[in-house]
Length: 490
Image 1 (cartoon, rainbow, N blue to C red):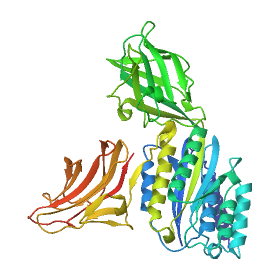
Image 2: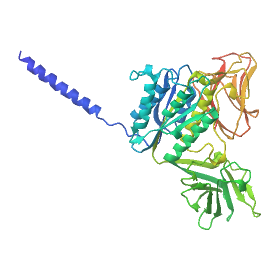
Image 3: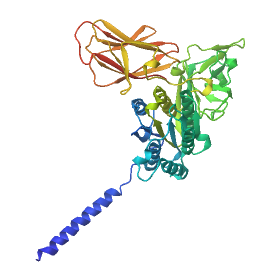
Image 4: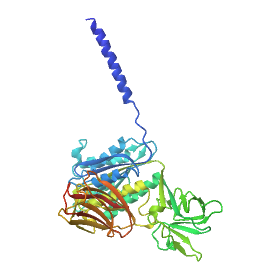
């Protein structure tokens, strides 16, 4: 009997030690979150497909665009449940203290179907919608209101127009953010406008321009709109090159633009290459500046403008974003089968939205019409033979398997830029996936691989890009197929 107090004392001591350790572990602070752009994505039909809200930059952008590409359509539209999940994700996210903008952006083409059955706090869809409307107006993230946008393109199966427009209104934080549009081109435009606005809110853009060093006292002009004559430009930087006090662009005039760099910019020389940097460059409407249509001109002794034909925006410019604070974005995307062929267009619009957020450059700033050209279906191709498209796995694949056969797909680049795609081969070494530009052979791949690999190549507007699978008459290995996905020109 005397052992009982001793055992009780030992048990009490162990319990205190365990409790102390548990409390110490529970109180460990979370690692500090980094400043930057945070994106989360929810695709919805009858289920939710979620990508966690996390930091995005140029190094991991592919993870987010690939997630969008991997979304598949199905029956069902749990619209309210998806938006509510997006709000939950914003509320529980580990974010830095310098958040300056919080947004949730919803796209849909239909009415909610059965969301309340997935959340037992509500007895009807109307009750669920009212709760979401209340959350949008009252929830705060880091003491900030949530900017809620809703983009709706009414599907052919929607007969209750009033309810559809009510949804778009109630899923928005203001009447300006409720966007009812007529087609997918307008959806793309709205996504782009929102991305440009968010980018200009939380970052500044520094642009470095490189050119052959001019003769002293030469007037040079950089035009940012799509013009064939420098005199036609409404968006440009113009100045006079001087080497009397170092290498400088002096007497700078910003037309349609503004910059903190002022009227004199000191450049750097690397051999015969001059670099000029413009800090916090924006349009006069505070939008980021696209370099897609950028050209460099020099004024001749006769007063005429001479374009530098060797100036290439891809090679001669460098854009750097300086974040002023953190922006947080939740994308909520309708993946219901009612979208039909518009489903691939929706994914392209969402991918372009992500591209603009990360790059910080407007897809149409400066007067151009540039948007990333995404190839997501056979209908996006100009022609195809012995190839097919798997809409579930989101890849193109070859179907020719007879000896000495070839099958191909091709499309035309609608702008100059960088062709990017992922490829995988499951063949023997002499059967090849070949890439051609304007029927000029560029590269090939063969062999058996379990993984997709990325390849990029510079292309010009109007280039015909062809993927061909050539099979010889020897043995077969693997699937005897090749696969290509995530094709884009950006």
